[in-house]
Length: 153
Image 1: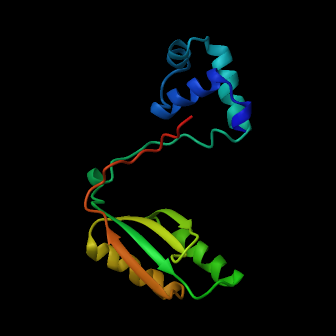
Image 2: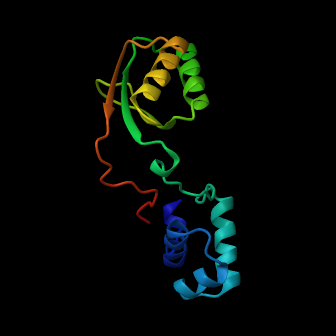
């Protein structure tokens, strides 16, 4: 899809990533276009799946979610039924912000946001009660150095 995006599309995407609540007039002014072409391009990029959705980015610490854990998971299970159950469990857990299947020694990595270590333990106990996991290692993030949702377009 990136081959179909021109410079104006990319400028629009930069503006939407910076603040999707901007008016069409503001975006058009910043990218050097007018409102109707900007709207048409946004609509087209939504239809093509370039723009997936618009959301609000919240401050986790302001909401009392002060602990961020990266959870490394190794499993001895690789059957389709286990994977289906594991993915179902992850989808149902709001603490899991990201989940990635990896190549290498670790099978999965999760980004988990919770109130504190006790809340992480509650999450962990629920996870291992629902799905068989060979080994879990939790790493507490001491400081978030960079976090962004902005893609380099």
